Figure 1: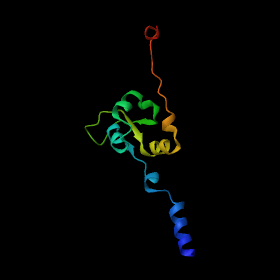
Figure 2: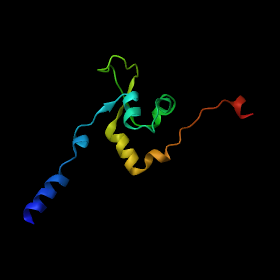
Figure 3: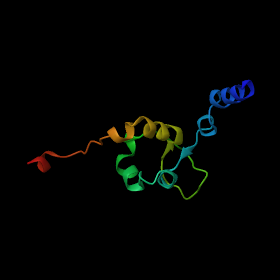
Figure 4: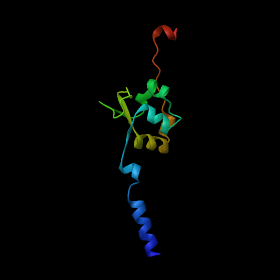
Length: 97
């Protein structure tokens, strides 16, 4: 029992691999890993999800200026915050009339 308890403590006291090694994802990678977050959503409401500016991507095909942290997205999903995000839609006075 002592050996099992020690092994369990080792496993649960150390951070998981993805928690220890955060990865910044491009919008295409976010859509692949989390299919319910589409690229269209990220274009329009990407500012609702924590992101950071990326100067140059390793992948030359990516043209986006922003990258998204995998760990922060997982944290938003697990805490339920992603469901509470309500993007503000800008309207002009003419549209309200």
